[in-house]
Image (cartoon, rainbow, N blue to C red):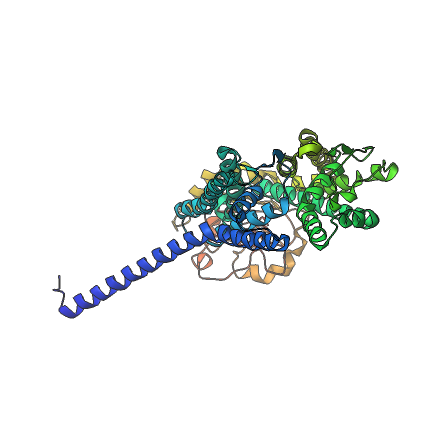
Length: 539
């Protein structure tokens, strides 16, 4: 072994130092990414809240002594933690800030979960996405508890606050990380294509349903714009107008979710008013401009026509989930229905709650989930049944499930050859191997074998010249590898030959020959016709 020189040792030392610096750089970069994932969204949210609350206090001419308490309370409200002010508990909180914070957390977590990270490194990213918001919730609880002595605000249960914060950010970070690394998840958990298709279809169904509900709410607001204007005018001054308008925008997703539940057949209630597609029971509601979209009377026939929305969405999902395999089709439809129903139940639960003196607001969760599941599942299963019974589907299924002769498939060679008769299939695979082995012995005696022509042999004349170069006196052909081939005469007669008449020149493997048939030896190369003709092998 050569003795390392000083120059080699110095070069090796420089490489080790560069490697250590690169490793420290990667580690430092990962640490910075984790800090950004943990605190980017909470810090930006707190900054926006601070500026907004400060502006409101300055416009109202109030002092700044309640600034910290107000910011902490709003942070908890963003995470759907019920807020109690002056003894009045409000559990129906705006969904728009919650969705924005969740999307921000998910995007930050996904940006740090690229393919360069291993699966074990995703755990710190996920924990960082939870650590920052939980720390900010703890600070908010401490500030609210400290301000209870001077402000009419009651601190919510700490366990409830941490639970809501953890659930929102965990769901957002987990969903975005899973989507970013979905290919790895598919491979790790062996998720089939039908399940993936069903999951995507379920997400599309919820998106389409919410889109239709948004269009319905906006149309209702435009039709009842005079009432909406009167509610905004109840603010009395510019600050009141601005506050009611901003509050209506923040609560718009709540109204959209309730409208989506109504479209699938559930009912929504706000205060003393209950609404569904077939009936309306009017009652007192909070004077919020966005609630001007609520109807006063039953819609009648147009309300019943509203059931076409979930039917069409379910039909689109069913068509998207079609498959020639009935089980895969049913599996996709079932997953789509389960995903859509689960998302609807979660959104409806977040959109409702207690409304102080007005009682409550929200959607009947069991009916919203069951009806969403039912529309997609029933329509999807009906379409799957019809699709499975169609002649084209049955033909495609039979074509995909064709099974060739087992004796030929044992060695991995399937033949789809109309020129071979049933007698050809009676040979055992071992017989083929034995005869192939005997082909190397020039003194071996070959048994006479019988080969048959069929009615489609008319194109033999086209290859006659190619056959003449490698045939014996009787016109028998032999493959370059020494294997047995199909014998053809020009008069389409059944012939028998003794292979012992073959010469070495005829068995030269280097010759390039065109055969009218296919090599019968399953271990040798498969030789077909000229390119101008249809090959005899399986396609």
